[in-house]
Amino acid sequence: MVTAAAAGAVSSNPGAEGAAAPGRTRHDADVVATEPSAESFAWVPRIPASAGALIWDEARRLLILKPTYKKGWTLPGGQLEPVDESPWDACRRETFEECGLRVERARLACVDFLWSKRTRPGGVRFLFDCGTFDAAALATIRLDGVEIVEYRLAELTEALELLSGPLRRRVSAVAGPGAGRFRYLEDGRPVAGVDEG
Image (cartoon, rainbow, N blue to C red):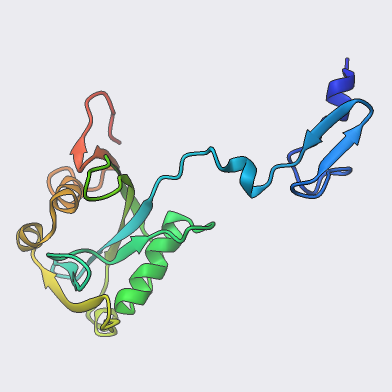
């Protein structure tokens, strides 16, 4: 049985027949419903997110980058665009922008939740293992010269010494013993009670 309220409800699908334009109110009998608009999602939490790439050479050395905007070394990658960019798309875009490499396939290696600190917002970090690039592909590395000024192919132990704390723990968790398994981390550390596959 369909109630009067159900009959007058507006579909959340903007293409649905009879749906009102976004942000507009529709009147059916005594029912008033408002289609979602950007303002109607203002209460939904916004969590910063970024995506990084593990890129290896044939000698199993890791590509690391020297940024100008923070201390130490980092991986190719960066923040998701504020509107409708997926972590995978951000990984591919940022890697190309920072060092000129085109990433076509990867395995999601980990998701790392960072708690907020006084010095930085928290958020979610996605890390993709983009596999091994041959010498010809790595010869196409071109740094942007603004955000990134140097690159290095480093043995894992050297890379871990040069990377910052949470990033170091993240890379160690997915590239060290047990490499190849997906990991869920918080501040770069495994979480009790979360099974890893």
